[in-house]
Image 1 (cartoon, rainbow, N blue to C red):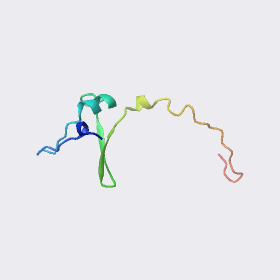
Image 2: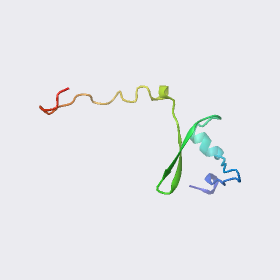
Image 3: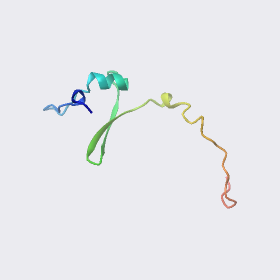
Image 4: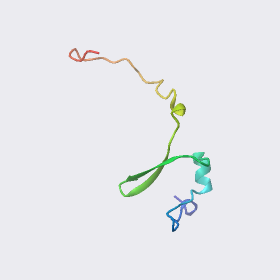
Length: 72
């Protein structure tokens, strides 16, 4: 993180995401972000539309050797 990626919390508890970060993350006005608290940190995770996730599992190997006691 450099000084350009630092934000200040306003009296209304608002922050402005720096332009460079918005550009790198391809954030647009109205984008939804999930706020996650993790080990004393805040993380902003962009929510993705379900349609953008289409095809992410294409490369998964679906051949599975099952134990004899584990039928389908």
